[in-house]
Length: 172
Image (cartoon, rainbow, N blue to C red; front, side, top):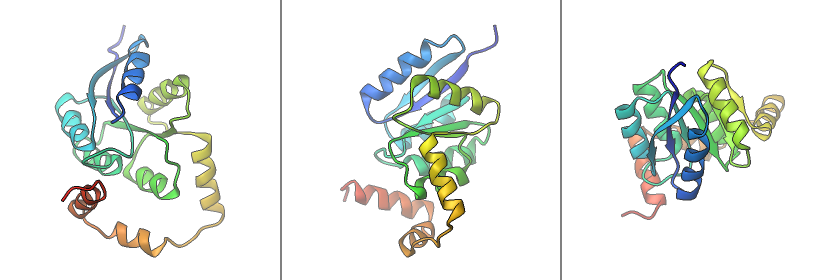
């Protein structure tokens, strides 16, 4: 039997993280090797544990999933990242796809969808929830200029985005 797919879970909600871990560990070809409760810990654990796949939420404390994904892909480009989020906003989708994530699923997805997305990622394929695909198609068919707010945010450095995230969380 080949080695199992090594998975890191980055999710700040304990019940979601525990449920995912249990479901994935029940798969004969998958093993959860670590868990992170915030974006900063996700980056540290991805570098330390060298998982094959990171399942990551977007909205996490200390560092967003978007920033964490960028840092992981920069330092470990072979690591596959599958986003599992409740957010389907166009900005998030574009930012993450540009980062090179292997999948973007909404939390309404089934366990089967998540398992399929992990297998697809391991084959260098991309998996998207149907509503994410719809957003992308709608954007493609009716291109709009980025809002000035989005353009300004995109001009921030990684450190400036990190400070922005901390301020948004109420840190001094």
